[in-house]
Length: 97
Image 1 (cartoon, rainbow, N blue to C red):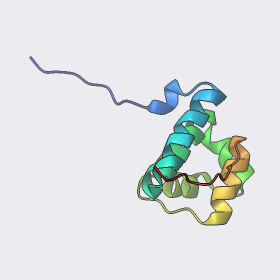
Image 2: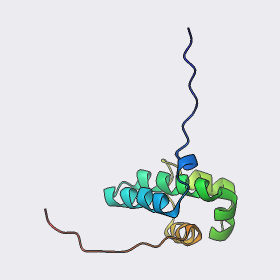
Image 3: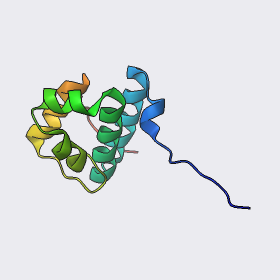
């Protein structure tokens, strides 16, 4: 008997601004650039990649490539995507453990 699987797309489950912000917060807390880019891509897909690309001022294809685990967005692209997603970064001092 063959096991059938279906691809998992986390973007389908991020249907609220709160869940999207939670994923992005977790990604930024890790400091892992590939996780941050991937999380931004997931949230952009959840909101609609075409619209996010348009608002960020880049092509949809470039945004898919940039916001992948192997992507490395320029600061201007990152800021444009964050604005298009309707989120902002907040800087707080890192407390010693």
